[in-house]
Image (cartoon, rainbow, N blue to C red; front, side, top):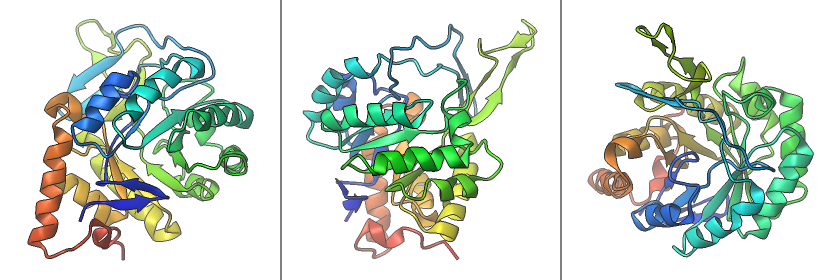
Length: 298
């Protein structure tokens, strides 16, 4: 009822762990998989280790989370052991990578393929680090070159995670259309001010907004891209309940990623949402989750 294939990757349910939380350590990724996630996406990994920004890097508020971690990661040569441990759960592990050039992405993607990941997710959308992420992902020509370079060299699925912080998501989605799937969306660029310190809360000033506050934005872009281009889409942004996941799928997502919700609900959120989706399908007389993908697109 809940299982399906997304770009050739078989998932026992449409629920995946989003990149950026509990996904740098192999044992935490394995625990998330054993707790109900159908797949995990690793922390975004670069060519070299990166420390990220100095604290404060996170601001929590009622509508979600504002963060500017700064793409801290151990570098590609150190992530292999963690991926091997995560793969012990017997479920798909997708490697998230970021870079500044097609050659960097290819080097990282090839290394991830050697580590036997099920696919790679191109981080073309981090909103708070110069020279990579959204700065790369806002250039249609560069996005197209990166995607075509990896698709021409790798034998595993290539997913492109796109930013809402661009003048036209459709333009970037079109440039990335050779991907096996699009991941929509990454965080929305924002900031917060400490009124007593009289300065921005985050050390980087700007950060990425995630959580329930961005769900309507994510659903809008999933719907819009599905309607115009009809690609495989993985939806992400503000998913906390079964209804949230179903809404994304009806808007056009074949699967969804969950991240910020773990801070509020813990890793049991995957089993809770999975149960809720199954109950909805049974109540509505729907045999397979694939039957609801895109049903709201008109």
